[in-house]
Amino acid sequence: MSLIEMKTPLVEMDGDEMTRILWQMIKEELILPFVDLKSEYYDLGVKHRDDTNDQVTVDSANATLRYGVAVKCATITPNAQRVEEYNLKEMWKSPNGTIRAILDGTVFRAPILVKGITPNVKSWTKPITLARHAYGDVYKNAEMLIPGPGKAELVFTDENGKETRKTIMDFKGPGVLQGMHNLDSSIESFAKCCFTYALDTKQDLWFGTKDTISKIYDRRFKDIFDDLYESTYKEAFEKAGLTYFYTLIDDAVARVMKSKGGFIWACKNYDGDVMSDMVSSAFGSLAMMTSVLVSPKGVYEYEAAHGTVQRHYYKYLKGEETSTNPVATIFAWSGAFRKRGELDNLPELMHYADVLEKATISVIESGVMTGDLALIAERQDVQKVNSKELLQTIRREMEKELND
Ligand code: NAP
Ligand code: MG
Figure 1: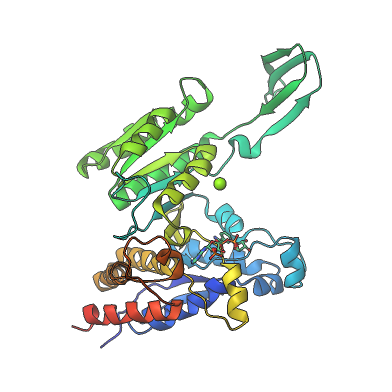
Figure 2: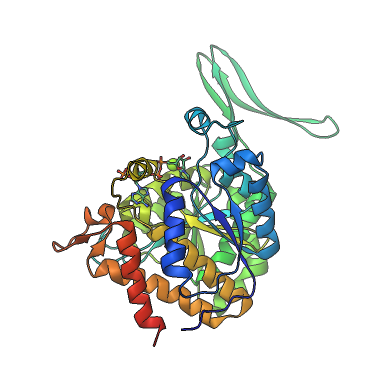
């Protein structure tokens, strides 16, 4: 069989611990036998980040801006314990944070559905993709304890020194106070990413805030989305048979619970933080959540939503058998290949991405799966396998499809 050709390299960001082991296995079993892989490799393993004073993380993000598509392995975000464990020079920042600061953009998370593992919400038959705005609001707030009576005011001083004031509260006794902000530019880029991704993945877009109560702040989000939709995206949405709608966050939540799924739910920062945990746990497993960073600069970075699965790695180091689920990492690769295929007009590469995903799902649906899924699967005759065995089973399934 001849290998499938690529044109432009993928930016490959390797990572840490158990997911680094899976990364290698996935390449050996599911990629290199089928694709003439072109990638520009960046080692974001914590030791190499330390050796390069984290320059490698910056370089990998810049490469993504040049090439357009990256695939990333989970990485350690150092804390005090990790600094000691790996003898690091510094407590380096979160690589995802560094990359996001360079690429800008919105993270879209969606579960991978398989038959035999039913979401806790019975009506959900299609994935719900959650888009979380990741700037500002309560995450960049200023707050204080109010010790006793006094007046709290909101004061804005413009460039010329002119003040605008509003009373927040005439405190008669102790209490608390908080100030927060957002930026038109950030809300606009969030909205652009959401509209573009909805068109890309052919899904409706829902957006909700609390604009009945927050008549200026939340209203600004609604207006920016509405204006951009009318001026730029409406025609494309109508052509694609898609809808965008805005509703109160309360109504959005109620509708989500009664929906079938199959849409993108855009959330403000706090709503997205809370709702993504609800949506992902209701769908089943963190090991089945995909994640893609869509940048308004038109570039994409695919990864798994979970971390480096540290507990499994320590068992692996002791020579014990582990059954770590590689599915979200496989889908990071397939997502990246499909996007590369689209951008470079390579139907064979897109087909390979489809086959890789279909084979993965069909193996699990046939009852062969890792331990985390075996625990929640409905069928009784589950065959629990280790990561390597799962990948080999998927490979055999792919060979049937691709070697014809
Ligand atoms: P984690 O790696 O997501 O794992 C938490 C637990 O979830 C695991 O112990 C395991 O449960 C289960 N799990 C997650 N992924 C799994 C998989 N693929 N297969 C089977 N089980 C899976 O989170 P963590 O242990 O809290 O974090 C470890 C490291 O990851 C940290 O250093 C953190 O900085 C980093 N992290 C990186 C990213 C990223 O790069 N995007 C995201 C989050 C965390 P059991 O142990 O019960 O089997
Ligand atoms: Mg959270």
